[in-house]
Length: 297
Image (cartoon, rainbow, N blue to C red; front, side, top):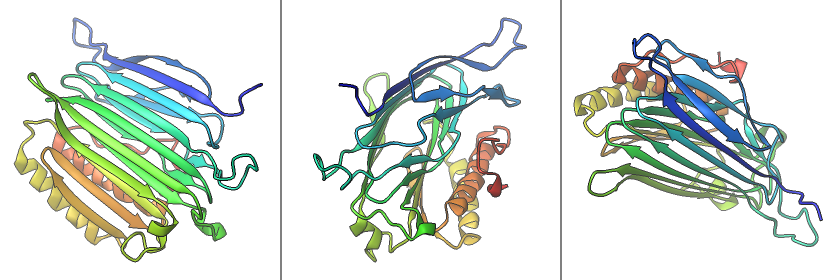
């Protein structure tokens, strides 16, 4: 009997292609993937950073779908990974008489970042339709002198249609570990579950359907003065924003939460913070990617 669910996987291996003359200093990659994954043509910025948009050709996830994504970021590499569109998670609860409680769709992501490398993983938002069940796991390993920037934006239900998550569930687990010479250290661990209860609770989302996280893990020896400067700049961004925002200081980096009604507001806020992170790191100013929503421009 044919399977009705997707089991797709994608493996990416990035490495620096610097020539002996030093004239060609950019990050290139090798890939191996199966449907529904597809890769668009990569591009490069002035620092040789590989900018790679990832496409999900199925148009969304249904119960039982499993996606596995793995990326190895080699030594002296700079990479920006993004997606071409929002990920849609369709309703599963109550859709089947055989399995009325529904089945989770899931995505598992595993990333390794080697010495002196910098990864920015900025996928577009995930939209969990009414009664959708979705689980995601991220396992990140990073070396002492590398950095990792990650944004995760979730919308519960299609608000414009008066829809909420109903009996759906969103689960997320993020683990970031620093690879040490003697032992590995935990940099950040985050586990979230969003349901109708948390969506409606005054102490939860209070009927605000958009929830976002921005996590930045810097190099271990990154100057604390620069992190303090970055936090001051972020607080200014907060004052110009009418949504609920929080800023947490990590041992090596920052953690930001967004809660509001507009995905566009969240994207603009995170883009502004991303620009400030690039500045304190001494990197070039980020550019708006052509695969992102035009209304944000």
